[in-house]
Image (cartoon, rainbow, N blue to C red; front, side, top):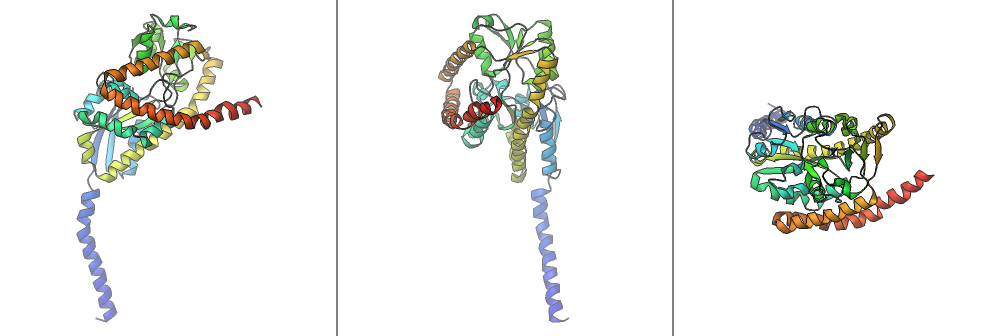
Length: 369
């Protein structure tokens, strides 16, 4: 054999041998596949919360494609595997690996969890996302959920929500006394201080309760989602202020043991898909709400307007008292509250000379022109 041929054969043989020895390691790292289940607090077909761009089912499809089929997540809407609001316990106990919901549904178990959905008069989408990703919010969230063997992360955001639907107009603070209203989260505590009889109902139960007069008012999401539920058919007064939810985070929770079983690349795929859905879902809301509100007002006989300024001022006053009272009674709430408010104070300074100026001055002048 000529020297050149010998060397070539040796190199090829060595490469083949190296590939043979390397293959088992690659297979060990990348060959294992996972079949998971995700439950959801919202009913089958619900836009944003179940189906559509940036939704949990979209997230599951992203993860499947990004992982090359190594992580396949089967999605179950509310009632298909477990009841709507049992996802926290199901994931904590390892019955399912994942759940999609809003953290304020777990206020009875983890009161501080409410801060990771929304805070009345708090941070908008940009501010909330900045706090979670870059201001220490994510770390606090993980610490809060660690005793329950849960790993949380943001997987969606509606942006600012509407104050809600009322069967009768609201003209003064006194109109809230005795009012029966579907409203979750910290805002419910604020309304309760004004005499509201607060109800926590899953999305699918809101319309029949409002239609039958079991409740007098209801908050859900925004024009597109609310129109789909038919809330405009049960109440015609739509208040748009959105003081109670300047943003609203969709929470993904993962069982801690299941999370630890994933290779690091699959963990990163899950985080990347969740972050993508956080943005995609929010921009979908921004793209669909204008048309829906226009239709509700022009074609469905809805009166849409902000709350009177004196009511907003009273709601802000009561909100501050409710938040401070909760923080004084619970050390975990205090830790999250102080961190949230410190970040908000900083963010407000920037927003006050950036977004706020653009909205009130630049866009205002463009609209007048």
